[in-house]
Amino acid sequence: MLEIGKCQKLQMLEKGAYGVILDGKDRGRLLLPLSQCPDNAAPGDELEVFVYLDSEGDPVPTTHRPAAELGQVAWLEVVSLSTVGAFVNWGLSKDLFIPFAEQQHKLIEGRHTLVKVYLDNQGRLAGSTRVDHWIKDDSQGFKRGDKVKLIIADRTELGFKAIVNHQYWGLLYSNELFQKLRKGQQIEGYIKQARDDGRLDLTLTKPGFSKDRIKNVNDAILAALEDNDGFITVTDKSPPEEISAAFGVSKKVFKQAVGSLYKQRLISLEKSGIRKN
Image 1 (cartoon, rainbow, N blue to C red):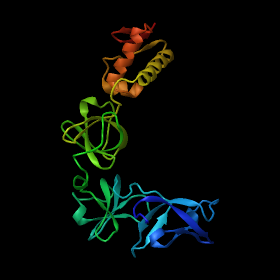
Image 2: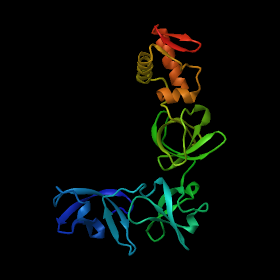
Image 3: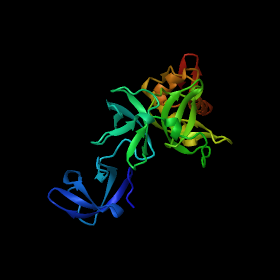
């Protein structure tokens, strides 16, 4: 069955002067413009396409990838407003429509907003800014250390709410962040804790001690010492932001690496910095 709003592989049936015919399964034969077809493609090959509906409700394949597929969330720009809703740019020639009923707040042309892609009651792709309506608080199947995809949402008193794998809410705590985050940013993270109530605590660094990770930071510190005549002013007492800017890791990980080098007698710790032995 053809999946509307999803990327999928469809078999190429014919190739003509103006386009190629793809097997649209239960929706029949679909035309893909020749400009979107690889030059070396031949009948029998499978092409990966995204399928959406045109204004007549007919399926249209394209090799262009939208910012979000059905069921996903993306940070999209509002490109126009109308008497029935708004339109956002999601990377296709046909903008995504957000009806008034699915607008949680007033949309302003030129501004960005978080949008969830869904199918309306007529089977057409549409967008919703009522993200809370679609994203769940109670997750299932996660465990500590699982790698996940995050989309940064609103800031709270404790930190940042983030959408986990386009489906669930999680929380990044401010006191554990070592880099600046912005709303709509897509970033990889990890499950720090999956609570009994299904809520997720998140982290941007993999939980637990990792020898490989510490070794990489050790190497970076030693390289920085070599490049700076054996002395750097960053220490385990430096602000997290300074440590992150210099080495791209949290203060906790940096302190573990410094401790490892100190135990190996490779460095000396001074009030103003770190010196290579």
